[in-house]
Each structure stands twice: as C-alpha cells, then as structure tokens.
Image (cartoon, rainbow, N blue to C red):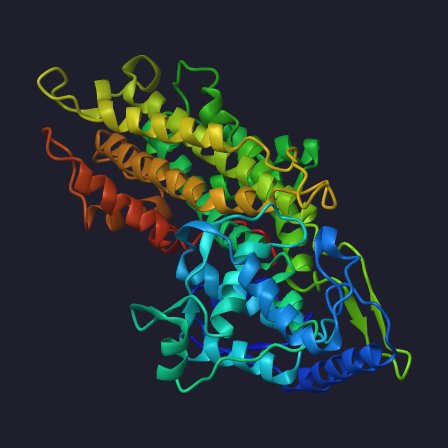
Length: 515
C-alpha cells in the first residue's frame, strides 16, 4: 500500500480509507510555512496583552479568569491532564490512528497556533506506529471530543499509555523506545490538540467505509436470495425506476439486473410462474437499497468536508501584524452527529431487509423450498436457528439506530448548554456494521443452500462465482452439523470483501467519493 501524502484541506475520502487500512502517512511540505506562521501569530497576539480564550484565560465557565504570563505553559499542561478523563475500553487502534491523522491534517492548516515541533511529533508517532491508549467513552461531541483527544495529547507529553509493537507501555517509555521525546506545550497548544471533532469523525468514517462494502454485498446476497426463491427480475426493469427519478434506486436496480443476467434458474420460470408478484423483500430491493445508498452518499459528503475542516477554537488568523484569535463554535459536531445517524439508519435497513429474505427462504410456504432449507426437515433443523440469530442482530440494530443527534445535555456549568452527542452516535456504528455482516453472512449461506436445490440449473455467471467462493470454505448442508464455524466463515467473506470480489464482473454502486 503506497504512502498517503496529506495535503491539509484537500484529502480525499479514499485517502482516509487507505490510512484507516494501514497506509503510511506523510505530511505535505506545503504545510510547513502555514504552521510556522500560525505559531508566530500566537506570540504576536500575546505580546499585545489581549485576553485570548484558552491562551491566557481559563477554560469553559472559567474563561473570565486571566492567567499570568509565567503560568501559560502550565495552563496548557493542566488542560490536557484535567481533560484526560475518559472511561471504557480503548478505541480500536485503526480508528485511533485515523483520528491522529485527522488531527494532524487539521493542525497543519495553520489556524490552530501549534508549534512545528508539536506537529512533527504527531507525524512521527504515526510514522513509527505509536498509538495512544484512548478510552472510548467521555465525549458529548461539543467543545470538541475533549476527553479522547486529551488522552492523545497526554501521550504526547509523556503521560498515560501507548500501544507499540503489540505492547501497552507507559507513554514516556514508548516514546523513548521509538527515539522520540515528550513535547512541552506552549501557549494555545494543549487546547488546540484536544479541541475538535476528530474522534467522532474517525469513528463515523470507519463506519462509512464498512457500510459501503456491506451495501454492495447485500446487493449480491439479495440477488442470490432472489434466485433461490425463483423470484422475478421484472421489478428491476429500468423503466420502472426511471419514472421515480431517484439515482440511488436506479443504480441499485441496474446492479441487481446485471447480477441476475443470463441465469438459467430465472429462465426456467419466466413463462409459467403462478406467482404474480414477489414479497417486498425481493421486489422492493431497489427502492430500499437505493434509499440507503443515497443516505450514505449524503453522509459521505458531510464527512469529507468535516475531515478537511478545522474544528479548533479559538482560531488563529495570521494575516500580517494584525494577527487575530477569533472564538467560534467549529468544535460543535452536529454535522457529524447527523452523518452518524444517517449511517445508522442505512445499516439498520440493509440488515433488516436481508433478514426478511432469510426468513422468506426458510419458510416453504413463501419460498417453495424444503422447510428450513434442509433435505430432511424434522430430523434436521437446517437453517431454523441461523434465521433466529439474524433476527436477533437486526433487533439489536433497531435499538442502536435511535438518533443520537436529538439528544443534548448541558455541561460545564451551563456554559456549554447544547451538545451534539456525535461521539457515541459514531462509536455505536462499528458494532452495528458487525451485526449487518452477521446477517449478510447468514443470508449468503441460506441463499446458496436454496440455489443448491435447483441443481443442475445454474444461476448467472457472477452469482455462480460467489457460490463457488463460498463453497471453497463451507460445503452444502445435507445433515445438521456445528453451524457456528460455517457462519463465521461466511461473515469473514462478507467483511473482507470477498463476496464483492467474486462478483466483480458487475459494477456495484458505491458512495461515489471513495475512489
């Protein structure tokens, strides 16, 4: 995987995805002058004796307390230590690394007043594989993701813990092992490091990357389930979807049509089929999946802007001698909260529709297949309980899909009186995506099993390629066996993108900005 060169403010979503998946990172050389100018601007502002929030004043409700010049460095250290108050399990290392890269790109835009040495340390930690141990709970998504980002900043000053080469070490020891030294924070630097939406944005981006893969996989497993039930491809006719004019719906129908093109199973019941219309879980796939696609694209647009923005406060504008520090509210993560809620809704519906297809396949009255997809029902239970598992996963996601953005709770003695809840709104998404992968893994198994009953008739070329890929790791279910390993193997194919790769002859729609 080639290294990603971060051009602050101009990083594509595909580059953020590469970083999340482990690509090396280098900061563009064009950032250096802006970083230096911003740090110099802070010194000029201080020399004028002005009160600047978080630079020579207290924080939050204590903003009216003026700090003496001799205590400014201590002030920045104190804010990091006092705000590193998170709880819970550490955030996953790939997400933490993405968060660090987002913070690096933000600081490098030259609006945060951070010294070049501080930016260089953050870049070096990324390059040498040092990932701070960051408790994942404690942010309400306004005044930035204060607690988690403070844990990151604490590691940079040698406090807390860092993961390095699979070990969990004291921060100072980890830095020393990597040939680095803790940084001493100057005016504004502590606040700049822990103010921003990078924690929430990193989790939301990780979920977006997973959601795109799951949506594409669900189109494949949905087409395979349609084949297993001897469903019709007539609902995917382009004329139907052109009349409604939704781009996502049109593209989903086109993909489903292409996935089924040339199927002998479909041809076998094209003329003499007593069924007039299929159940919604088959017939309405373009409408549901297309709506999910549209929603994910909107979330992607929001997150692309957020990832390239500066969400610090106050912001430093280094224009000649008249440098200014302007207080605002870019740290408020409402856009990220809305994007996270949209991703949650899409994930919930992708899984919900897939579970309905599994339920349809195991019901002989609806599918025309043997009960619970076993050749010997009664003695064998077949896919009875995998469908129950899928139902359980979908139900969990329904509970988790409740919008986080509609909640708020005042903090900091009512100074920070409206917050976004973006942090846990984004953090819940990885578990939701894992649940959807479980549902799709079960659908993959059930749909392939259903198609087995139509032998020797084959499905289309891309769907047969998917079946072959599954059968490399999971054989046909003749009699009951330990199903957990089969399900885990199928989930691995879903999560790793193998299902999409097997059907790669068909162009599957994506969120559009991840190329």
